[in-house]
Image 1 (cartoon, rainbow, N blue to C red):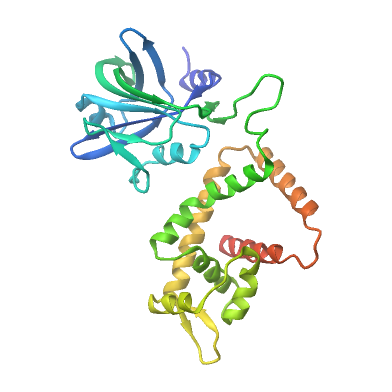
Image 2: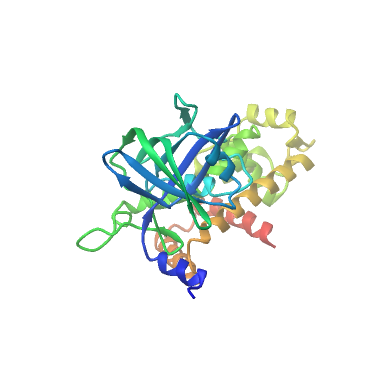
Length: 318
């Protein structure tokens, strides 16, 4: 008797691409992340994918006559994670167009196939969907890969890997922006610009301060908090001014910042799931070594600013 876990672990050795399958059912856009995709035939053009019978989306896909399969690019991990997360509006904030048949079509993928549902087969605990390809788009993007339960990196001949060959500045900057993108989007939805977010973070950690004191901390970031920014946030109830010209967070402002910090920590925790404990320790050690190598200015203002940000995150952990 083959155990399900043993079979799953063995099958995990087969590296696959990552897809998002979308459709529309009952006036609602539906989408999910899947790696159970494969080609069937070139003539006629057929592809297949499968969905667990216990999936909350099974009724939608078994009730419609069309769907779209999107092969994700290597830069679309965040999109893959979003469509793999239950209980959220997966299309919120995501750019897409709609096919003539009403199926949502995601943008900037490695490839995309618009399909008519040709056959459905019972596949044990899954339903297998076979689609006739009606239209397709493709690009030169590197594909996103999945191996042994986590995202993998494409290995190139001659050693090394395409991701590792990229510029170090690019990799670090892209990782930062991908980790914090959802937080920036949520802050923007609350009416907070990036400079607002930075300034309120300084007040959260250091307590009431004058605009000059806040701007001294923001200086390394290239941002400056202006009088019109301050008056707008006073009017919106995030901060209040005292007679000694200091600025403090209101109760609403503090609660908002706690929510944004919690969002940031959740994003960080989600990203860490891709690594083992040993890999995380190694990553932290390497980044710390890089910072020690670069931190050769005793009065480095950017270091001071980042130390405030780190203290804020630590305070929320305690």
